[in-house]
Image 1 (tube, rainbow, N blue to C red):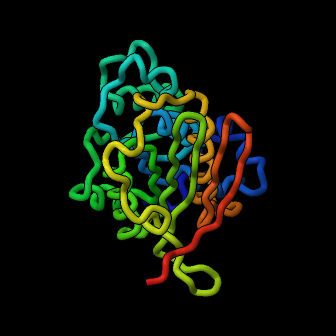
Image 2: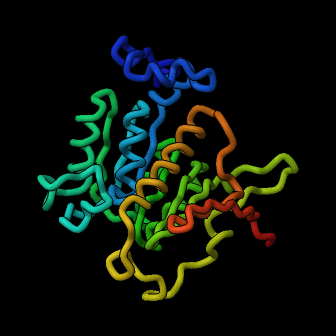
Length: 254
């Protein structure tokens, strides 16, 4: 791997607003170019994540999804369009990313993530993003990221509310205390039928744009090493009240 990828003249112009930021600059943009980010789900959350990471110049984006685009997706999954209805989400998302930024390599994985395949897939990337809509995939991805020592940016949405956090349970804080993981927040999945799906409960489309954009921002921070990621903090967003709250949490002691 080229540790210092050369930015072409076109790329320097494309990312000019990044390069002039002292916190990012040319070195940060090079980090983005050599980064490999895995995104689980090319749906409501995955759509803005993929678009903003592609626009930011992340060099390689992996997309995991086994679904096809349906008309009811288009109210929130803005990486897809009407012409993509009936096609696979990974192919539709790849085409959209290529149109947006031809400098980004896209690796498609048309599969359902589970305990059997998650770890090998996660090991191929630097950071993972959870935009899934089922608990089996969420736990499989979180466990795989912990085992492979990969940061995970995870979010969830429902109706008018969203949540977001960053997980690095393989590291310790300044006092040597292990950082929390997904199972510290949610020890086990709720019983089937307890949490209604978006199809059952509904969801406002723009909410996924807000939370997905925040996920993309956390990825950019992790890649470039700027700011303070949401590690050990759960960000809660109430769209109707326009209220953000941050709740701190810790690893459970064994």
